[in-house]
Length: 107
Image (cartoon, rainbow, N blue to C red):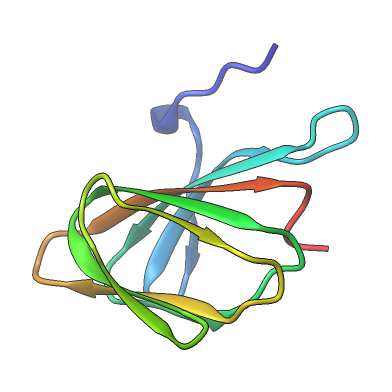
């Protein structure tokens, strides 16, 4: 069993966002879960695994491939492997979401 609390995890700062690793898809545990807080833009990038994104707070715009989607709390996106995607915060409040992967997206 794995038990983690956001308040006990040291975040990693990357550009305009911070991420907290709840799990990293290690041997014997295939799920990778990150909590993300965006202050501006998550620049366009890809992963070799599918990514499910669930937006918790804030508003913005997600670009997935050629599509743009308005995001708000309760929005879920599933990004296919190898698809270029990015997130742009709108307004003054942080944009917060969970990024969920089966497998390690950093390989």
